[in-house]
Amino acid sequence: MEAAATLPLLLLLLLAAALPAPSHGWGVDGHLMVCQIAQGRLSGAAAAAVRDLLPSYAGNNLSSLCSWADDVKFRYPWSSPLHYIDTPDGLCNYSYDRDCKDEDGVKGRCVAGAINNYTTQLLTYGRSSAPQYNLTQALLFLSHFIGDIHQPLHVGFTSDRGGNTIDVHWYTRKTVLHHVWDANIIQTAEDDFYGDGVADYVDTLTKNITGEWSEQVPSWEECGKNQTACPDIYASESITAACDWAYKGVDQDSTLEDAYFSTRLPVVNLRLAQGGVRLAATLNRIFG
Ligand SMILES: *[C@@H]1O[C@H](CO)[C@@H](O)[C@H](O)[C@H]1NC(C)=O
Ligand SMILES: *[C@@H]1O[C@H](CO)[C@@H](O)[C@H](O)[C@H]1NC(C)=O
Ligand SMILES: *[C@@H]1O[C@H](CO)[C@@H](O)[C@H](O)[C@H]1NC(C)=O
Ligand SMILES: *[C@@H]1O[C@H](CO)[C@@H](O)[C@H](O)[C@H]1NC(C)=O
Ligand SMILES: *[C@@H]1O[C@H](CO)[C@@H](O)[C@H](O)[C@H]1NC(C)=O
Ligand SMILES: *[C@@H]1O[C@H](CO)[C@@H](O)[C@H](O)[C@H]1NC(C)=O
Image (cartoon, rainbow, N blue to C red; front, side, top):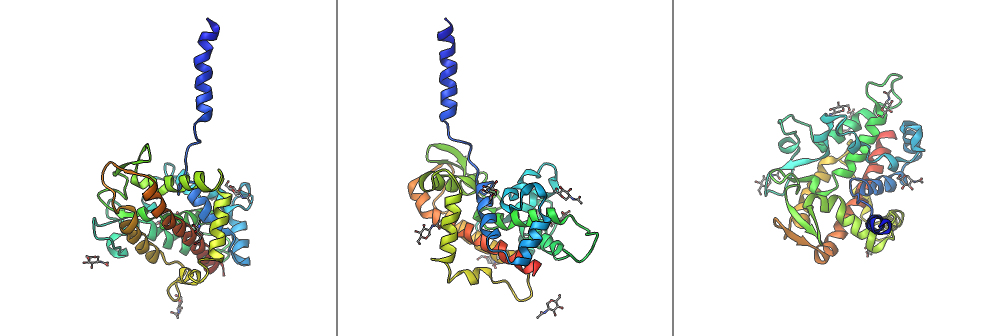
């Protein structure tokens, strides 16, 4: 009797242990990679400012707090529209004046406006003994939003909310297209190529930044004369990549597997690398 009753429970426990850990993407792992790449490229002055601004419990590790902005979406509901940009359906281009607004049409309330906002706040660092804004939060928001603006579907079409209303199967698993780009592509790459940690993945991206991609890197870091941050460039690249790669060939209820994964992974890798390089370049410009 007893054995018969405990057996199903035991089986359940065994099954639960065998299930893969919950996946995290530009939610957690993608942001972690962007911030880890960035922190390795900071100038002395920027590294000192980041060390000063991070809360002590972060142990001078920016990447440990790069998802903080997602964690506070409910505590700070005003910050939700600052993670993305909705562009007109089917146009595949972006304009700050036309597109950077929230659902109520309030101008500047999008990820590009937020990057400008928190860059401006951080430029006051060290200039005033009683800063007007919480610069720790400014650093954490900026670090997160420079990651988000590089995720192609964070600059997507309005009516499908950046792929959030497009149901797809990622291999056998039901999800939405937005989540494929936030999480599934990165997760599948980790499972297939990088053991189970992001450390190897970051290592490979970092090697390509100083190797394969080294000739392009200075052009990634470039920003208009006298500009500290260039979110409009990154947003335009993202909507182009969304049209050329993310939306392309995908319909409601499409099944996406190897052919999609292998052709889109290089795009994800490039965007993660560009996000990291540009976050560092922005912080280096801000802190001198
Ligand atoms: C920084 O934090 C991240 C996320 O918690 C972790 O994966 C990484 O190993 C940490 N890096 C160091 C140098 O401790
Ligand atoms: C976007 O594309 C449309 C259609 O090609 C064009 O009419 C419009 O001028 C473009 N807008 C921007 C900001 O590039
Ligand atoms: C700018 O930052 C302040 C402080 O966090 C915030 O209240 C405001 O909503 C932000 N605006 C934008 C557009 O990011
Ligand atoms: C600034 O924000 C951080 C993170 O939310 C918080 O821990 C800290 O207490 C804030 N600092 C001030 C002076 O309010
Ligand atoms: C690094 O570059 C090599 C050679 O181009 C490429 O095969 C590989 O996929 C790249 N890896 C990453 C993570 O970008
Ligand atoms: C750069 O910006 C500063 C401050 O806004 C301004 O004083 C300076 O003239 C600008 N320089 C150029 C080359 O535009």
